[in-house]
Image (cartoon, rainbow, N blue to C red; front, side):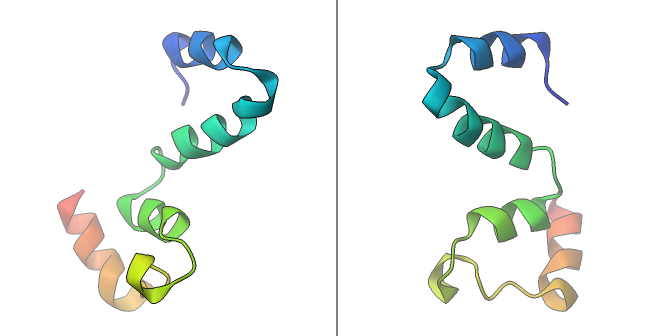
Amino acid sequence: MLSPLDIEFYHSLAIGDRDEWLFHRTACDSSLFYFIKQMGGFTKAAGADISEIIHKPVCDMWQ
């Protein structure tokens, strides 16, 4: 959920930067597991090998 401050900041950005900022900002609202999965990238070293069976319970505990 975006706060009034988030919305104000969103409108202060250049139009070309808004979608990318919004994607990254709303990713913070998802669970830690899905945040890592989304932001991890496409290489194993960057989180692409994250396993829902193994890593989700650990991320849920940390969160």
